[in-house]
Length: 411
Length: 109
Image 1 (cartoon, rainbow over the protein chains, first blue to last red):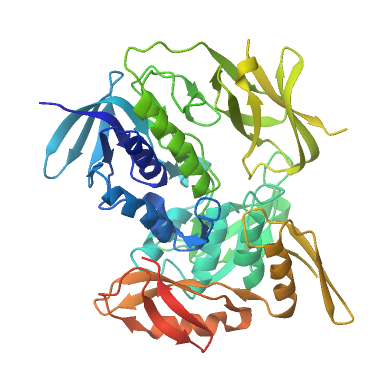
Image 2 (cartoon, each protein chain N blue to C red; image 1 turned 90 degrees about the vertical axis):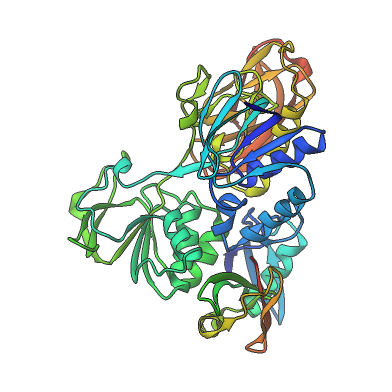
């Protein structure tokens, strides 16, 4: 016998939690399904500071940020199902999950919110050359082992990738007593926040080696060292620059991938660049009644923004009417210089905020929303970098066709 | 002195100069950056987040209430490493009072 809900949310991390509260506030009967033994998601292992500056106007650590939401959820009638893994979703919003007490359970929602977060790109996916001894970890896994299990993952570490996870782990490794020999970044610049370069690398004299990558891992049972080299404009190693670094640990911080395996069997419009479903300004996917938010929708920079995005999804999912008529939606296309825009579809409404990432660093840019050659909105930026999501708003009441978001030079 | 403000994710590039004992900060986008710049020039400090052991062997995350001088960070971490706290303490409770005479250290989970 299937149990029915108004909104079923998959994932109890920052996105799922904020969405559940927003949906509940609008009177929806909510079921929040989480695979681990407690809510909080990735925030539980992010014991560093930097969360909540926008959302709560105070600087909090990850667990503190999560607790604010957990406390609110505990005051509501949101049904939280822990230790449960969702294994299937259908287009008619039947969700199948499993756990040790209930076995296999099917429930149905009027709306479903996808808040599964993302996975880390592993060694195989980057064709990391050499052997596979113990001591190679993705940075997030090392963070879990360190901050949740209390383990020392290694004593002499090399970190591949200078995104925020790699930077944060550089400092955490130093704090646990390890020596961090360097952070290697294949690109010409780091994708992490500038504050993290200062407080995680500069503060501890850890070198950031740009245009550099690992060419080979050496070691039989345990990592013994890595060969590394500079790369050319095509990110190919220049072997004449190859050197050896003795170490016992390699941390990989080489990208996050939205965890959307659940959608494989569905007929859903997918954005290859974000590796996630395309959505409209309500975070609704091309399947009516299925919404997406948080890192499952696109890899975010700040948990605060995940919370705002998830509130939109929660609100819309609660207000969603089955068998309602969907308005006409227009495409939002990423123009020159833009890596991706979100939402990818917009319907006529009022002010809509489009989030985007640029492909390369650009100074003095004028970003425009263009409809048939006419500029609907323009925003000037002193600097745009790929590592920071930016936004531009426009009035969607003026929509008559597809729009393009493009970068022009600020004249 | 050129540095980046760490007080929020914006990362404003600061230029800090001294003229006859007066410290000038430029490049900041807000008042918080201004005071950070001045402090960073005179006595750079950091909030420290770390892990502490409970009597049962479990580990829990902590943070300093006040930022501590950079040159005291490792001494503080050593203090935390040797400490053992009561497992019944809750999130927000003080794990170590007045560590190194500089700051209380509280549990963040």
